Amino acid sequence: MTTEADIGYGGKVEVETSTGVWFKLGEVTNVTPPNESVDVIDGTHMESPNRTREFIQGLIDPGDFSVDVNWVPGGATDDYVIAWRVSGETRNTRITTNNDTTYTFPAFPTGWTPQMSATDKMAATLTCKVAGAISVGVAS
Image (tube, rainbow, N blue to C red; front, side):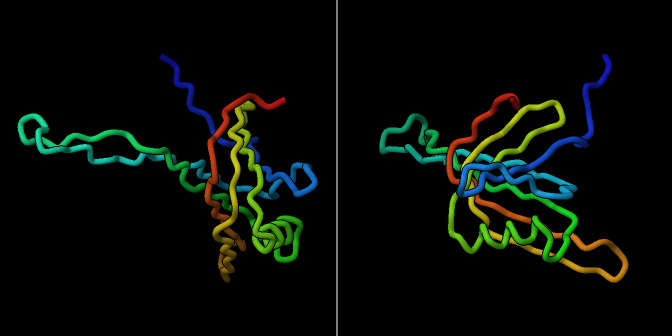
């Protein structure tokens, strides 16, 4: 069987502005999509069979996501992320893969971590909390 593996080249990350326009983050080098998890709730009671704990599923935590970029101090992405963080707004965010699958969700920034190195390119990581359900679709 031939592999269907692919590289992420051609993907993009966009954040909706307060005016409803999508802003594309520049020079994205890596994306870690949301890491969803489900709460585990202990449903054990005094008559649980065989003295064994019982569990039920709780709510889904949509998790966090992060984006690594080539950092350009004072560039469009740097300015946008700083303004978004200061605004305190939750904004729609969209990850589009190279085959046009989209993951759209509300999010807000929890971290913007630029770094400089004497021997490598400047880079930054944007970390966001996903604030609601993730919608999967196809880019239009």
